[in-house]
Amino acid sequence: MAARRKSSNISKSQFVRDLPPKLSAKEVVQAAAKRGMKLNEKYVYNVRSAAKMKGKRRGRSVARSPRAAGGDRLELQLRQTIAQVGLQRARAIFQAVESAFLGR
Image 1: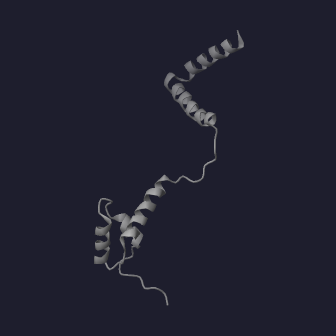
Image 2: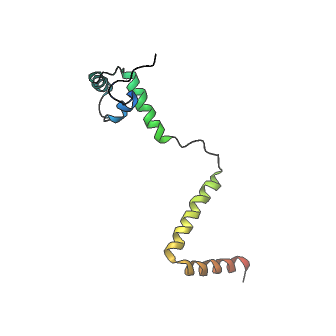
């Protein structure tokens, strides 16, 4: 026989997440009891911990060398600088740098 849903359509974990984090676990358990839900303090701690970790997860990342990671940051800085000085001025600067490297 299928389990009967309570009158509230909210899950226990969603109930815990919806309450202010400043409430103690004991207060959350008491509030749940008033709504007819059976929770314990350990459950509250587990739900809150999982909610915090969910924001920190980004999936598995590919290991990159420090040089490659810094390259992304340098490229972003370069793009921002080009946006600030303008494309024509940036081209003139790049041509001057290229000439210096080639010894012209």
